[in-house]
Length: 339
Ligand SMILES: [Zn+2]
Picture 1 (cartoon, rainbow, N blue to C red):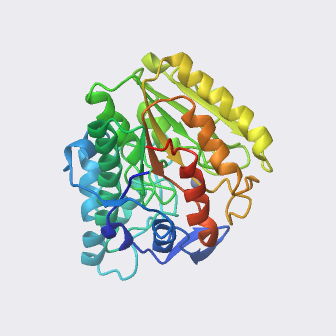
Picture 2 (cartoon, protein in one colour):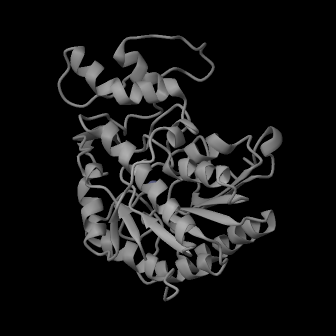
C-alpha cells in the first residue's frame, strides 16, 4: 500500500500532559510515527494543498489562534509549552478575549493538548498528509492509501483542539472528497476513543455519514460525546452512528459491532470511505482497555475492505509504541488487494 508522510510532522514535541491528576510525559510522541514508518514500504512525501481545505472545516479565527498561539505565549514571557488552565463553562456567553491564557482555554476542551514550538507546522503537514493520500486514491483510482497523520485529528472540532488533536484530518479529507464529487462520503472511526471532533463537525450535515466504534464514554474519554443516542441534529439526523462498547471488549465482540457499522454505511449508500484508524484498541495499549491482538488487525481490515469502497486510511491514536509499527502494518496488510 502507498503511504504518505512528511518529516515536519516529527518536530511537534510537547513535554507533558495532565493525566490522572498529575503531569506525565506526553504520550503522543514522534517515536510513534517513526516506529510506524520503519515498518512501511511505499512511503511517499506529502504534497502541499494549501490552507483552503483546512479552512473548509475549521473556523478562520481558530486557525489564526492555532498558527500564532506559541508566538503569543512566548511574547507573554512564558517558557515551556502553551497550555490552557481555565475553560469556558458550557453556556457562558462568547467573549472575544485577547490574553493568550484565555484564548488557550477558549479553543480547547482538555489539558492534554499543549502547543509547542513546531505544533502548528506539524498539524498543518499532518492535514496535508491526509490530503495527499486522498489525492493518490482519486488520481490513480487506487483502492486505498494510508496517511501517517501525526498529530492525530479526530478529537479536534471546527474551533477547538483536544486529545492530542489540532486539525481534524479525517474531516478535512472527507469534505474535500465530497467537494470533488466522490460522495456520498462516509467516515468510519475505529480508534479506541470516540471521534468527538469529527462528530461535531458533521453533526447537522446530511452529506457526510459518521460511524464510530469506541469505548463507552460513560467510562472513557471524551465522556461528553459518543453516546448511542447521539444520531445527528437538524438535517443531519440519521447521519451519525455511535457504537459504544464496554472495557475489556475483544475481537469477537468487536467484529459484531464492526459488522453493524459497515451495514449502516452500506445502507446509507456510501461511495467513498475515510477511515480513522487508531491502534489503541490493542490489548497492550497503555491508556486504553480493549483486548485486540496484533493478529486481529488484518481481520478487522479485511472486514472493512470487503465493502469495496475506495478508502483513505488515516492514522489516529495508538500508544503502545513498541508494538505500534507491527500493529499498523498488520492492519494495512488486510487492505492489500495485490495491486
Ligand atoms: Zn484514541
